[in-house]
Length: 87
Image (cartoon, rainbow, N blue to C red; front, side, top):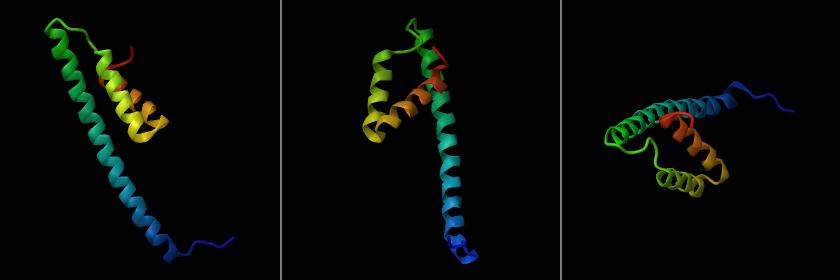
């Protein structure tokens, strides 16, 4: 097995920095989405509606499943839960 030299590690470090930047942005977007989703739920309830709309949740699940495959469903479920809380 070959050892990774310092020169070989440079591209890896650069790639990891890019990944870290993407992770930071994903976290920021996740939090923003959650905040907006909570506001929608509060507005819906204030106007006499239900806390959640199952048809809307199905649309979101389908969009993520189509884009990301089976794992997309899990991602969407986590996003939905962070915005509305557990059922």
